[in-house]
Amino acid sequence: MATKSPRQHHTQWPNVASAAQLPNVSGATIQDAALEAGDICYVVGTGLYQCDVATLGAAAWSQPGGGGGGGAPQSEFDWGGDHQYSQLAVPVEETIGYGMLNGSQVGALTAYFRASWNPQFGTPGNAYVRLYDLGPAAGPPVAPTLIATLSTATGGLRYDEQSLTVGGAPGAGQIQNTPRLYMVAVYQSSQAGDTVHVGSVGITIR
Image 1 (cartoon, rainbow, N blue to C red):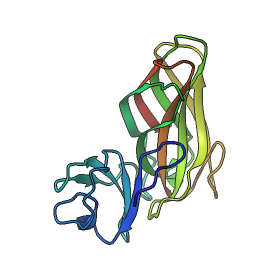
Image 2: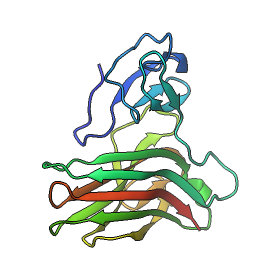
Image 3: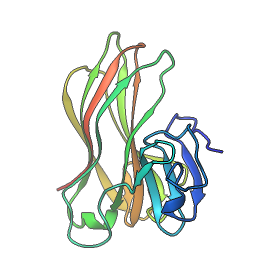
Image 4: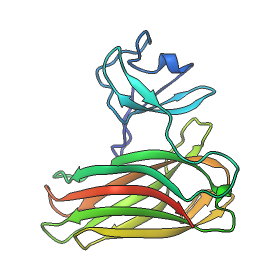
């Protein structure tokens, strides 16, 4: 049975042996109306998949995008966008998207966690866009580790970024120098009905 994270991230379904056994795929053992687009599932030996279409018997899944291993430094990794957050009476964090990055690709450059977003406040409060490490790219996903937070108490269209270091272990302000899975999420704490539109979010290396 699928379980929900306390932070209200998308459901992580039980590991499966092949992509043909991903939930709600035609012929798969697991057929469950609770599946939603954005849910994730680990395929043993292949890695993490994210549900794009949740239709019973006709689900579509894909692996999160992002940089691969080795090679020259990359410039842009977009891990979500055009996400509309509407604050509930009891605010919850919502997942925007997932991605993969090998920190060694940063090289002599600097990696930045960045977002173009538009918070709207009816009463004073704060809005946040957060970056989490989910473990090795080969999976399976582990409990999220908070890497970076972009925050504001000012409404209106804005661009924010935070520089990241590269090291041997994920932590506050630091990504690991091996291929890792990442998740980005949004949260707001003001009043019910206030909104945050995230136009784009991800990593820039420059």
